[in-house]
Length: 272
Image (cartoon, one colour):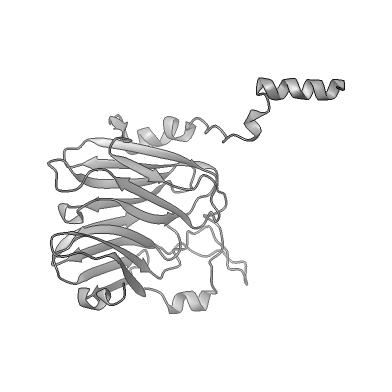
């Protein structure tokens, strides 16, 4: 055996090349530890949230402008302590606070799926707060870059023509007082203020959804107060305890435009 092959074999046996095939070790969350935590939560105690929730996210995103994030809660909203608030944070984004969500017992379970923009390799974290003011956190490291300045998927005229149009898809529909699952999507460019018009190269001003409310029978299922880090055409998969009536959705954006629509349950049932 040649000297080179002998050395190569020893290195393999010793595991010195193993890191080539292993998942990279996530870095220390410096931005969170040194800046964001104190800025957003001061000296609040934030507990390990792995016992009550789980975050699902891609380790390496296919598209940094549309990164799916799912928060799954292991506790329902019918217990003595339930989830009142959920905050999504992307540490390294120009605007780290993606959105704050408010839930009620009507939610049934506060699990949520949405899509975010990611500017560079970062931790994405979810912080849940219960009705008893206890805070819990989970975080994943995501490799993605350029999502906050990525151009829109369509041309400007087409985008603005469908502004505010809404869709509701019922993923799981049960009887009254049982848990339902639905997906809501609103057509909106959600311009971050960091993008450029591809024709004129002029900067596109920020224009994004900054409030959303979903109700059934005058009971709030959830509210969202987003910022620029939500993806184009904001999408939310959510749960609610069915009381039989239509779903009412109200949306506002940063330019003061208001949109609302009612989705009768009888109508959406035919679209399953």
